[in-house]
Amino acid sequence: MSEKKNGNLWVQVASLSVALLMYTTSMTTPALAEIAKAFPTAAPETIKLLSTIPSLMMVFFSLIAGKMTQYMSIKKVITIAMILIFVGGIPSAFVGDLNFMIFTRVIFGAGYGMIFPMASAIIAVLFTGPECNKMMGIKGAVGAAAGMVFQMMGGLLAGYNWRFSFLGFLLVIPIAIIIWVKLPDAGVVKHEKVKTSGIKEKKLTILTFVLTIACALINIVQFSFMTNIAMVMNADKIGNAAQSATVLTVFTAGAFVFGLLYGNTSKLLKQYSASIGALFVGLSFILFIFANSMTMLIVGAVIFGIGFGTFNPAITIAVAASAAQPKYTALAISVYVCGTGLGQFFSPYALKFIRGALNLTSTRADWEIAALFLIAGSVISMIFIALNSRKNTLIEEI
Image 1 (spheres, helix red, strand yellow):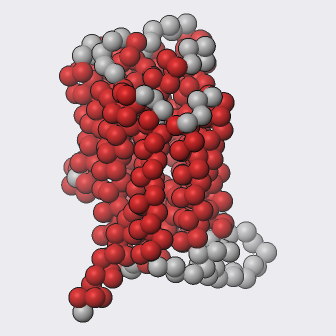
Image 2 (cartoon, helix red, strand yellow):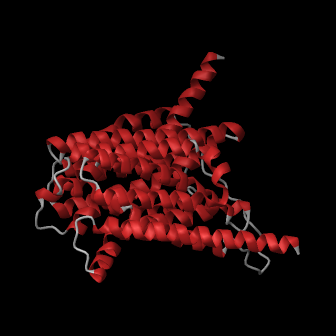
Image 3 (tube, helix red, strand yellow):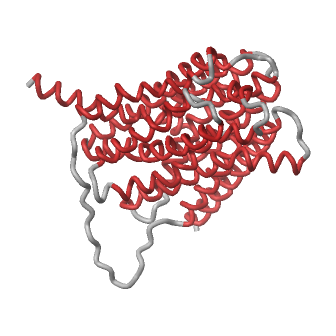
């Protein structure tokens, strides 16, 4: 009996360990300012590629990983992903060429993109019913905690030397050992063949694509917080890499707490949850624009975390519900993840274009754009939701 429980416990630990790998990308974000110093002739957008390339790779390799599960087990897909993360992470600690680092981030991003959907897929395969729901919730908490640890570790290591932040990927080794030894191999996922009747079955709705585009646009502006915080703090002499990691960690903690509280807050905010979450993120950027101390940045990070922790589950649930049928929920979420990745990757380039068009030259110009877009967008969406709700009420009365 105890042996069985011990076995089940290790299966849970191994399953949750996969989620840890989703947040390894957080280790290098606090080092961007130090890397920019090491390559003074490189454009800021080029430096930011180190942070945005994994998001672009996620777009393609999350879909590739799903296809691979038709031919090999999820555990084997995870194993390939872990190898790519390790190979794409460690070498930059020893080879200082910027082009080489960008190349290795492509390799890392491929593994990162494959891990992203597999972290949920392995839980769905190994657990059922209430236990599956419980594990999905714990997965989010474990991931947020890992993000905080990795960000702090990356910032502390970068404080000594930016190369050291890449040594943090050595943590993949013990995680990989746990997964290899304790994670069961569930075999190849069987896909049922559906007889075609000549009529193409509808899988997604217009709302799926509207929400995906909206999320891509939101990620273009909100991702500027992650890519710019270290550089702004360094340029304005507010703090170093370790302190920028602290600000990022506070944001992650806020998102973690309010993600756990979403079940309660959604009852209060109802259909306005995503809009109000985006509004809080917009308000946090107002604070970031005027912040001249660590304290103000931390307060802004808390508000950002509250907004993100409210917006993210709300928009995910809305996307899942937008599928034409429940069996296409995973497809709808995959499309949404692609939109998120594209928004994050194109963030520096889109914001550079807007800065040029508006002739904005401040080091915090990206945050000015983000604040205006998010606040205006959230207010407009709330008005639209209110009008739509009123329209539906009138139709019901008639």
